[in-house]
Image (cartoon, rainbow, N blue to C red; front, side, top):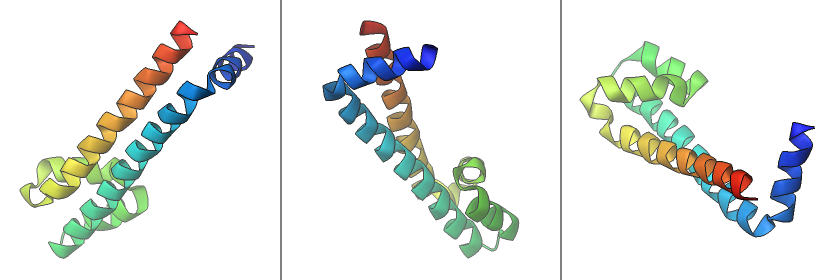
Length: 100
């Protein structure tokens, strides 16, 4: 029943759903691309464990790697921007659900 309400809210307010979806997709893309960049950075610096785990798990291990090592500042900036977009999209969807 709860899922039907959520679906009804977002289908009746499509003018709001499409920009929220675009923001979420941008966030996911930046977050995962940052994870892959962290994997490349780790492999380039002969940190094989971090690199291989970041290839498999993406930002789950790429984000901690980029926080620990200074050479991964670019992947860290990508993942932080992606996380900001993700959180903004989730907050906007929560606001849209509460308002509508």
